Image (cartoon, rainbow, N blue to C red; front, side, top):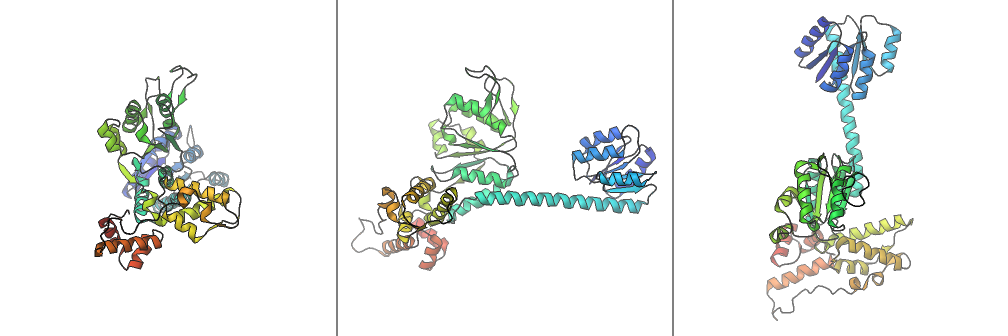
Length: 452
């Protein structure tokens, strides 16, 4: 702990410096009020011990400045000319203690220890409250799912959220990449600051560069004033680059500089602007394949791919379909001001689980909104679902080219598929029905080429 001792008497500064250093404290000293005000900024003390009466700026001035630097910094004021009026004023203005000279060293050390403990408790309480608020917001954004591979992705995301590392999220369109990015942001130390995003494939190259990096007045037709880019606007927060694989090679070069040097150069400018922002990128493309084709820079890929999270498609997490469906129906009910949520009849759940959802979670949400609109009464039947969903073929348990006398492996594969279908794709429950461990089930799925 660092203590700033302020007194215009050199002997007192030397004596208290020896006392505190002997107790293991780091000590900074100032022999006047103005020097103390400068030391508050330069030294960043944990505790201030100041005389009240000094030329230039007194102890109450030091107290006021300390509270501006850190409202929880304890300040102990001492004086040889104590008065009830000055004591009351000191306490009212936030002094931790008002000490009359001369004082015993043991008394002073005990007061300082109590002040340090009080400060530490306040800091811990503030951090705890901040963490509770952050967790509360994050829980509201936590992606929904119990499928093993999906939960593994969430656990990794929760682990890396606090690190500040750059994250690359891969997965098919509609799997919830932006939802996961927002979840990481809410769990991070940057959650109090902005979360901004841009779809790299939705804007032409020139406009994308201007939106990302900003521009200066006159840099192009229509640039009538200087404008900060989104990377600067997200200062201290998180910036999400969706569909990074759609970015042009020239813009990739500028983004690489931003990620690598932590600075951007606005369009038409010559001077770089520093930025402090966490980058999360997402893609539905195989970027390693894009690199081999020459359409994506390998150096940018390795800068972005510090932590990679891959979101599985919905067809590989069928056990989550029912949970997601319930969530989306509750969301629709809240948006429309309804108290009751229509129920999905068993036949509807079976159809929803059977369908492969090429559009993933986004397609499921849209299908349920359509079903809500078309449904009558308090339940949703299969007839309210889109035709492509309702008429999706049932999976074949045994392949058409299977021999007339199937082997044990063919029969086992068919039985596993049947149980999975009966349990709505829930692999945990399927493993229970089969009487095997989930890990054994996953090995068999892999062995028989059944999508996980």
